[in-house]
Amino acid sequence: MQKNPALTVDAIVLKDGEIVLIQRKGEPFQEQYALPGGFVEYGETVEAALKREVFEETGLVVEIGSLVGVYSDPHRDPRGHVVSVAFTATIVGGVLAGDSDAAKALLWDIKKLPPLAFDHGQIVQDALRPR
Image (cartoon, rainbow, N blue to C red):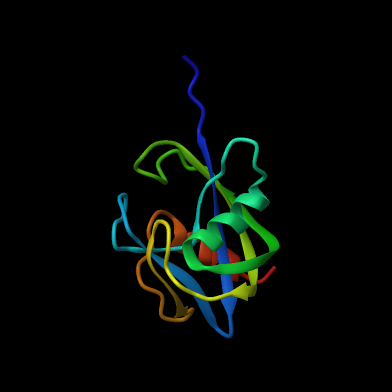
């Protein structure tokens, strides 16, 4: 039986020195803060998945910016080998509110971030690094 890693997306949504974070409803990392994102569905592009997941979790409509990176450490997610593709994104509509897998969705001061679930702290650092 062949095993393959699962594919996810994560969004770095910045606005006026703040970043959109969600508070997770369920395990793993229940009640911890994370970037909005989630699993790519079969037949879906990573770009479509990112827009869908951000909307489902935060109520925001976003436009995708640039690729931040691909995060493939087999141990980054306690559920198993999960590879994430992370993008920056800009808010173009919607109303910020937690939904789906998110107990809360909020804007957080980028200079005072709480500890983040998974490897999201590294993803944020990479997104903020001058290119």
